[in-house]
Amino acid sequence: MATIYTHASANIRKTWFLVSLMFVLIIAIFWVFSYAYQNPVILWFGVAFSLLMNIASYWYSDKLVLAMSRAKPVGERENPELHRIIENLAITAGLPKPRVFFIDDPSPNAFATGRDQKHAVVAVTRGLLERLDRSELEGVLAHELSHIGNRDMLISTIVVVLAGIIAIVSDIFLRMTWFGGLRSNNRNNRAGGILMAVALIGAILAPFAAMLIRLAVSRRRELLADASGVLLTRYPEGLINALRKISADPRPLAHAHTATAHLFFENPFKADALTKPDQARRTPWIVKLFMTHPPMEDRIRALQGMKV
Image (cartoon, rainbow, N blue to C red):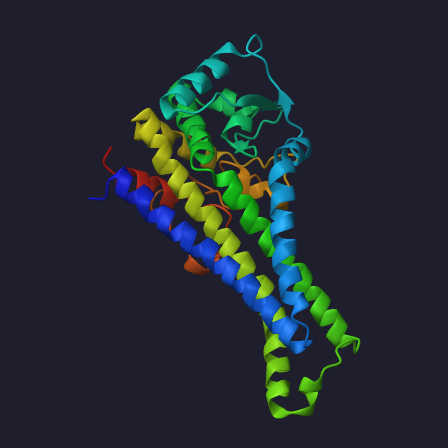
């Protein structure tokens, strides 16, 4: 039987494999475009631009996410119990206590963000506080603190930005080709024609491949946070019961955005949730490819199959 430690290690390896694959993909697409245009500057510009965008997004991501989610800071006097749970879990995890924010929404959900462990934020919805008991709330908050401890904000930012850059560059290439903006000696020979065909196919398929990788990374980080969170509480049933309750709630988050959906404990659109908390359900593999979060039944099954 797999332990929580082996489960976490496997997810870490798979995550870094997917992130590496994303970097290879973006370098490959810039190389093909630079070769097609006979201009190596495109490759160097693409790599430099990717790094610059990652740094900028990573630095300001918390402010953007909090504003988009309509999250407001909540003080210790307003909710001492919530602060107490987060502080105890942070001490257990060896992390600085994150700032605490509140989203006035009946849908049970939560997210963690921030550029590093010292500038982290945990936000919870009104629905989460109303629906869950203490052990279940601890399970969800331990999951979110695990995102902070695992530095998932950095990984998520890198993957999302790279996927966006690939989509933008592919769109520019296709538009320039469509309107006759491509002028290259490669058109005068067979090899150049083959390369141009490869470039066009790459421009069409690269954004799709980047999206699938981004979603796969998001699902892996959620499974890792589940396992890491249970390591903090030493009580898998708390998180399992929370997953069941949250999956049974059909209400989407009022201010949900596609760009931030992967940050939440559960898909804020409720697109990944179960219509019933039925562990016997099996989500088709083709559907899983397009999900920001693992199916609830998979998360519950994974937790039930681990030894603490």
